[in-house]
Length: 297
Image (tube, rainbow, N blue to C red; front, side, top):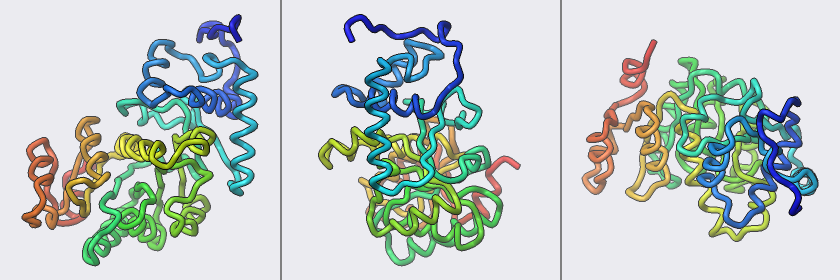
């Protein structure tokens, strides 16, 4: 490996082979100090490079085989890969703080070219919170938007299910690889989204399989940034002061997306975050009608 050095983008006159890039991406993540931030810096330093330009081929081949073995063991059918530079790659991802170069997916990736609204919130909503999430998602879907969320318990689950039940489109951005169902209770919904909508993940399969649970939790934070990048607007239905949904909310504001917060969050005297986000540009709304009026035609 000592005599290997990165290929430059100018030296590369070859088509993008998704499975080759999968292996190289997994190999980059095999390095102990790799983070989404360090990868973003690496690719900024090598404009136009592919993951395979930055990894020895033997190393990439080894990690491709291992990732595909894990996918087969998890019975992940039709695992697909979109790479920056391919026509299928969602260009909205470039507005994220750390744009991902590789996105794994199952289902219809073209959903991400449509107008998307992210519906997010707590994993432990009140009964009314779950009902509001389902009503909002149904109205968003019936208006022709794609309902984005993270397939977590609670608000996410209610939003995905309501959108699909209404005959609309829904896409999930996972905080785990496609080889993992988390929470396990959503395994049926995850399979349904793969069939009827979209599952997408930036999380490396091999690295995730080798790490402890505590180390893998950081992937959920980065998922929220990607979710915000893919959405035209983010709507917070219900959330506590430490909810991961607020990460998506903050990223929405930082990335120039519209951020809406349901009125009931402001009515909870125990919460300080609604006022903080409103001071930064979040809009207080009662429901989808208020949101629709504030979106571009």
